[in-house]
Image (cartoon, rainbow, N blue to C red; front, side):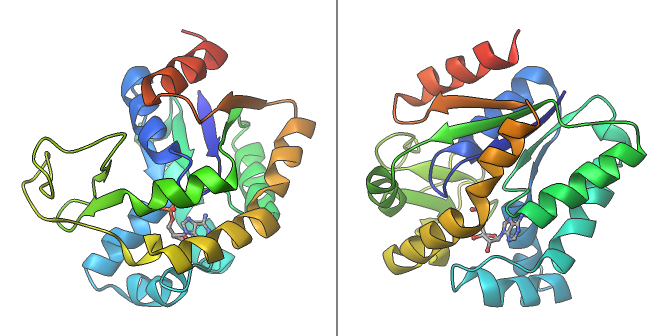
Length: 214
Ligand code: AMP
């Protein structure tokens, strides 16, 4: 099953993508996580990506598309995968479709987690990320067991640079301009499924499972 998660930054798609990957036993591929790992390891890709991410802008397609196409061609993706944060532009979606067509494959579901802008800004200010492993939490909706400390690796939790309020507003603008058109794109392809992302995290998950099927 090849699934794409759509939704504004902070809609909770990363959290849901991880849970879905676990339930269906497929890899979770997050372009944001890949870029952050590269930044942490100070790679050339990381240095380039950081200049865009810190400003709330999208990393250019030429640094993003090949990376994902290469990843979905790997052995562990044979039975499907969940893409979280990709595609984010129509050209990215077209490149993915073209690459999948060559492999005789296609996207099965595009799940849009819907959350209005006013909820997003509130949510993002409560988001915390681990400086060690990158795990994400929310002080209200998905709190760590010990305040400020990662459950997974015990490192410190911080408010990421790209989750600072002014960057969030910028990212929301970018989302509406460049990513929201994908909702129509996947609706036309007949694979769009919409779920309400404003309800409890577990209820969002159940709604997604019910649209994907057991
Ligand atoms: P995320 O963790 O998915 O919210 O991504 C964090 C940041 O990484 C975004 O604000 C972008 O700067 C960058 N990024 C992640 N995925 C993509 C993508 N598919 N295309 C361009 N930039 C991306």
